[in-house]
Image (cartoon, rainbow, N blue to C red; front, side, top):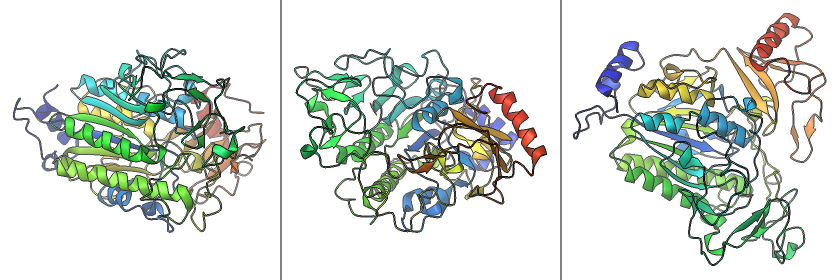
Length: 514
């Protein structure tokens, strides 16, 4: 580990933060060196810009996430890289735009590892600087080489791209395999009951949601009608592994306990924890203590449950004396969706709640609600509470954390916005490419430009506008955050400038435009 006395002096001199605000637990009594700050990324799944009370929600309360806002920096122009999960997670960990990797799309549970094991990643970079690195929660970046035997060690995976410790689910809660995987091994697997997985064909004698509705406690609306686990139909087919299967209503608590135990086990050394929560992705299965707590059905209930988990994590840091020396980055992988495969009253009990807030669109959409998400940085005693309108992306975590720890490793599409994340500057990105299911758009300054795309203007399955249109779309988000007034025809000069910038970054062959 590099001597951080020198590093923190250099940072102080550069004006990133004052020396009086350097981490309070600075001396490492064993070595005499300055202690690196711990780093935690809390990553929600399908949490919308309007799902947090500190971001304007009035029908739901999220006091623990709000605590991060009140004690940290709230970004109003913070973006995921994509409007869907796998691409955003790829970009977050690698600092590379997901559209540069043709395989960065929503992956099945049997997909091979998306991140090349030789590729630079945040955990790999931090590990080289003396950090212990861990992931707890949702992975969804593929495992193995494409033909996984779930009954032996599953590799490559998180441990081969920089994580010292991993406790994950392979893909999503609505996809098989429905098991936890610890450091490459299915947790609690009985070798006499081996797991078999297929995304093409069912196994003889195994019931499905399509053929056996009498076995369901949650009914499928679209797509989720294959193997049944815990009364919930999934995507894909699974046989065996009964002792290893998770209990959906216990998932949030299980991941929380793993995250807390990771913190306690590594409190005497700098650590990086990627806490990838599964809420409020489908199937929404709140623990009984939270069922009915929101009045908005299971989707609202699991948001309240997730908020409680965030509070418990913060409490653990405080109890272990780590809160003053821990940088927390909080965000979501994409925007909200209500009807995403199951009948769970998300639409019927929504009431006056607006998951996207004032934004247009949602998950899968090129409109703002697809990628503009809650985005918070918190470091007690270092980051002064406030609000920032700077344009920032989760892509920028890589180079910013690299600068924080004094690493020379950089990612090609990431920008060093450490000053911005620490509240010492409001000078964010000048532009950002946003992606939704292989379609891309450009955010620059107050403007967003969406090229013409073929396809339906609305995804009828989930009832969300896609952003597709036969013409260019140009919106001034400062005066029209809801994207109601297309200014492409009346602001030709601005449009042409943005097309030029877009093509210089993305290339001229960027999809099915025109």
